[in-house]
Length: 161
Image (tube, rainbow, N blue to C red):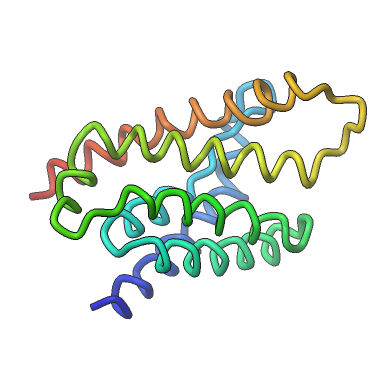
């Protein structure tokens, strides 16, 4: 069961990484873009647990780093940490509640903020960027944008059953 979920996570994430790199720059608002590959990571981590989320996050981050040509290891650290933190919200008997309720968006917000902040901290091109600017412009604004897109993802998941 976990092998199938792991395979689904990786396949969906690879598709979303390609969309992230090709399509998403066209919907950027002042260089702020949502990060789509975190959607399946959060969803499947809430269904399968913390170890699953950490390993899947590391692999998705590695694929993202290799495909995007960015800082090798930045995505691995940021996404594995986001998967690890999302895993704290895993409950064996509450998976459906967490993935099919408003809480999914809250967990997505938390995971995306962790990812955005860590990734921006590691790969920032601007050494003069203040800590507050890093939190707001590189962490919070992409998180809000991703959460808005994640709301559409949530609506799709909740209506699927």
